[in-house]
Length: 281
Image (cartoon, rainbow, N blue to C red; front, side, top):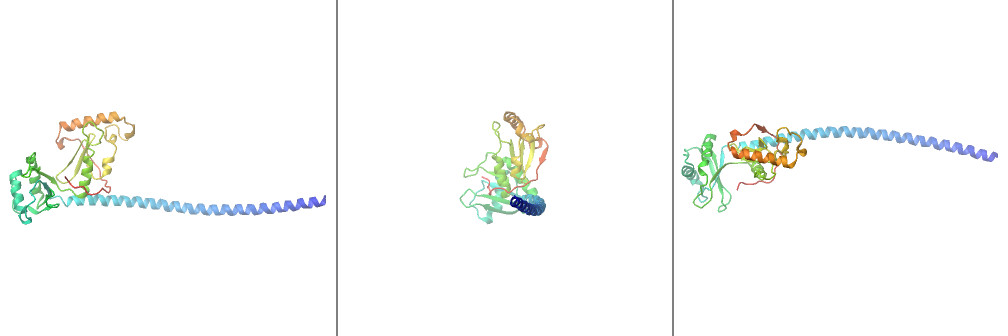
């Protein structure tokens, strides 16, 4: 009996020792977990700081890209591209030949000194066109506003003649993409019209508003956000209702072709990287 009691006492002592060690290990684990928690908190603070830094950098990049977008187009403000101009002239002949071309087809007289530079774009024999840099914006406007006289006209080779603003590679890619999204009045495409101003700005009619396009993000915005009284509920509007709105706006556009009669302007100043360069046809 005494032996049994002795063993029980030994077991109690051993268990007490084990419990003490277990509690010490638990305390050590708690201490380690607290340290890990402190480290995680420090990482979270760093991540928050980095997220804020990335956000600020993204905003700066977007701002710089927007400036570059406008700067590239602004540098072309005195330039026009002309399709249908004969492509067999020598470079030295181009200024005089273009003056004759403008007089014949546009009924515009180009004065000496109004052309700063002129040259062909593209390989010879590949329906290349010319780019004309005028010495003043007024000279450019004089030629550009006379382009209505070219409607339906062809040159001696049977090609149509057209005069267009000189768009930067980014603007050409954006304009090309925007034209793919113009509705014919029966489909569900978001735009009812897209055009380029003499300054090279790209405008589109979406819903009942005119939008200045500076990036593809402008094109990807929900159509319902531009329908009066339905802002912010693009996913809740039935497709048939949106189609009816588009058809109505398309009919309104058909009734009035003058940009001056369009509703108020909504301007967006966001620029995203664009796809590869797409040249005008």
